[in-house]
Length: 318
Image (cartoon, rainbow, N blue to C red):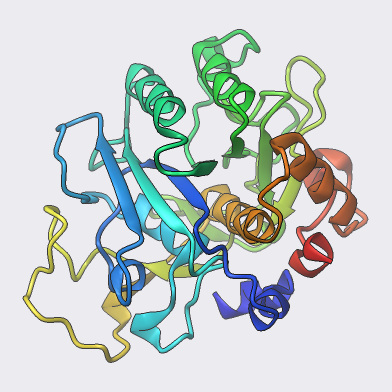
C-alpha cells in the first residue's frame, strides 16, 4: 500500500492526524476475516451480516472482501506499518452477499443494502464500498434493481462508492451498479500495465469506460488499482478464527496478497472519504462528491477513462 499512499498523498493525511476514526464503512462483498490488521489494539469489525449462510461471526471464504477492507483501513500491524490502509482507524461493517467463488444473487445484494439502510445509525455507517458488479445486459438499465438499490442507499444519506468494473477499454463498459448517476464510480488510474484481473489471464486497459448507455459521464474518479498489496485470509480459517492459534507478529507474505482491478481502486476512494468524514462529519454525501470532483488531479486523459481525474487525499482534506 505504500506506493498507493505516495501516489494519492495519503501519508500527509496520516501525519496530520486524519485516520478515519469512528467512521463506519460497510463492505458489501465476500465477507471479512478477523485479520490482525483489523482487530489488533481494538476490534474494528463492529458488525457482520451474512446473507448466504446466516452465520454471526465474521468470516471470508474467498478473500476478496478482506483484501478490499485492508485497502480501506488495515492498520498495518502485521507488516509493522508497511501495508497500512487509507483510513487505519475506521470501523468495518461486513456485509457478506457473495460466496466462496465471488458469485452472488441480486436478491442477496439488495437484502444487504436494505440491512445497511436499517442499521446506518446503529453503526454510524457513512460509506458503502461495493467492489462488485455485473455487465449482464438486462442490468444495464437505470431502472434495474441493482441501480435502484444503490440509489436508495444514497437517498438515505450514505456515500456509495462503486467499482467501474474490469470490462474496458471499450465505450459503455461500466459495470452495474456503477452506471448509477448518483453513486461515486471508481476506475483504475494505472490499468496501462498487464495484470491479473480475470483468474489466471492477464489484461491491460481493463478499467470500465463511459459513458453509460444513458449518456451519463462515468467513471467519476480514478485511483490506483493494479498490483495492490493488502490483507489475505490464508492464515485464517473460514470460521473467522485464527487457523493456527496464536499468530506471529512478524511480517509474513501469507498475511498479505496482491490483487488488481477496479475492485482495488474503489476502496482507495472509500478510505479517503472516511478520512474526510472523520475530519468533517457534517458533510453530506453530495458535498463529499463535490469535494472529490474539485480536488481530483487531471491526468490529461479522456473523460470516459479518468472522469474528474486522480484522487488526491491532501487536496481533498485541505
